[in-house]
Length: 137
Image 1 (spheres, rainbow, N blue to C red):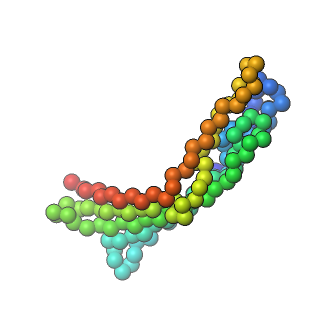
Image 2: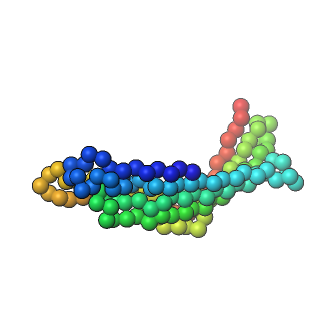
Image 3: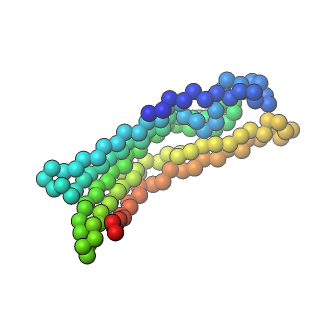
């Protein structure tokens, strides 16, 4: 968990001093668990909930990007492959295919005559399936 109260200071336009920093959520939290199944010691399941609070996309704090929560699930299985210890991992990130902005940033051109804003938003990945194998030599 993170609580961060990042404020703008000494900005070119004093009216923005004290506003929340661009792209910085005040609150973020991750909660994860990994459980090895008692009936099958080589099999484990895991899950993680990721929460990111709302943030702003401009110095004036007038463009707000909403908060989001994502669920990730996975499983792993340990075995032997050609006498080599092997672990297979399967994971599903963003199980509910939540649409969200993973990051936001930018700056206002307040020091120039053109009072424009350069803001970017990065979309979070859709539901993603991953399969991997690791070998211990």
